[in-house]
Image (cartoon, rainbow, N blue to C red; front, side, top):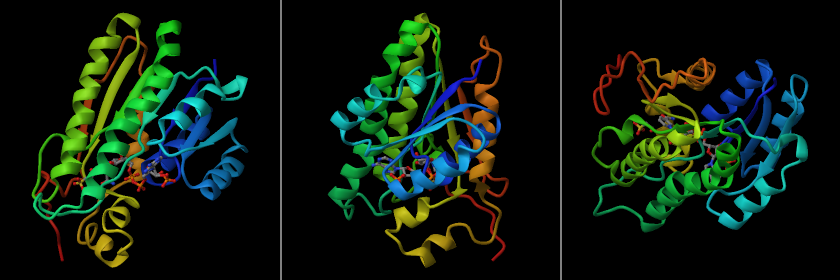
Amino acid sequence: MKKTVFITGATSGIGKATAELFAKNNFRLVLCGRRKERLEELEVALSKQTEVTTLQFDVRDKDDVFKQIANLPEHFKHIDILINNAGNAHGLSTIQDGSIDDWDAMLDINVKGLLYVSKAIIPQMIENKNGFIVNIGSTAGKEVYRNGNVYCASKFAVNALNKSMRLDLNEHNVRVSAIHPGLVETEFSDVRFKGDSERAKTVYQGYKALQADDIADIIHFVVTRPYHVNIEDLVVYPTAQASATVVHKNL
Ligand code: NDP
Ligand code: 8X3
C-alpha cells in the first residue's frame, strides 16, 4: 500500500532532496516549510510523480502546527513516516559573544519545533500501532566544536529526544531513528552566516562534502527496511571529514 511521508524543511537541502527521492519511489508526500513559493514549485513538480500536499508553517508556531496538521486533507491524514528535518544553525560565535536571538531561534526551531510536530503526529501512530519517525540530528549532536555551543546543544537535544522517543514508543510498535550527518552542502551555511554566501562557500571548498541526495538516499534506505528492523542511529561523514574539526582540504 502507498505510504505517506511527512517532511519538515522540504523547501531546500536535505528535505527537498528527500521529497524528490520519495516522490520517485511512489510515496505520498506532505511537504512543509515557510517559503510558500518553493512549496508551490515543489508541489507542481512532484505532483507529476505522486500525490503531494503542502503545509506552510513555522515550526515555532505551535498553534499553527497543530491546526494545520489536524486540517490535512482526508487523503493525507494517515501519516506513516515523519521526517523531522527542519532546522538550521544561526551564527557561529563563542558563548560569550553569541546572540540571544540566534540561541532562541536554534532552540525554538531545532528542538521545540521538532517536539511540536512530533506531538501532533505521534497519537495517530500510537493508535495505528505503526509508524516511523526519523529525526535529523547532526554530528554536532555527538561532538561539540568551538563556537558551535548552542547549535551543538540543540542537536545533542535531538539525539536525547531520539533515544527517549524510542523508549516511550517502543510498546506502541513505532520505529524511531536518528541520522547524524557531518558537513552537507546545502543552504545550511548561508543561513548560519546570515546570507554571506562568500563565507558560506568556503565551508565546502577543497574537498567533496556530502550532498543532500546522499542523505536522502540514506533516509530512504533506513525507512524501507523490513518492519522488524530499526536502525537506531546512523552517523555519516564525507570521506574527507574525520571529526567535527578535522577535514582534509586540498586548498
Ligand atoms: P537548509 O538550510 O538547506 O534547509 C533547512 C530547511 O529547514 C529548509 O527547508 C527550511 O525551510 C526549514 N526551516 C528552517 N527553519 C524553519 C522554521 N522555523 N520553520 C519551518 N521550517 C524551517 O539546510 P539542510 O538541508 O542542511 O538542513 C536540514 C537539517 O539537517 C537541519 O536540521 C540541519 O540542522 C541538519 N543538518 C545539516 C547539516 C549540514 O551540514 N548541512 C549537517 C547535519 C545536520 P523554510 O526556510 O522554507 O522554512
Ligand atoms: C551541521 C554540520 O559541522 O556545521 O550540523 O555542525 S556542522
